[in-house]
Length: 78
Image (tube, rainbow, N blue to C red; front, side, top):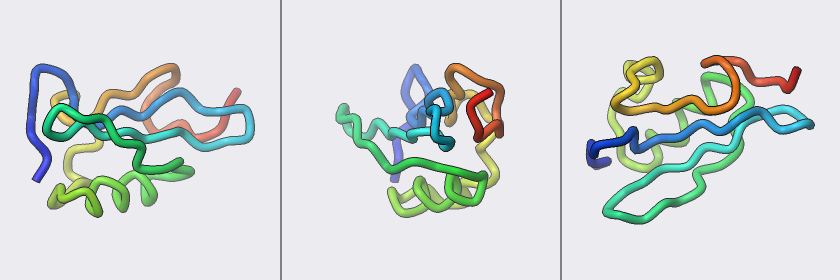
């Protein structure tokens, strides 16, 4: 199970020029790349595989997910 810490354990980075956003997860003090998400569906699948139950319920919760470099749910570079 993911641990809640002072900062959100899931980070969705800015969209890359080819589309999609890299998703990282911090667990037990280690940061791990989960993959490149191209949709909210991808973003739900990655944390679920990392042990978070019901990740779709935390996408907009800043305690769990930090969106960097672009608005939440924006998947293409603009």
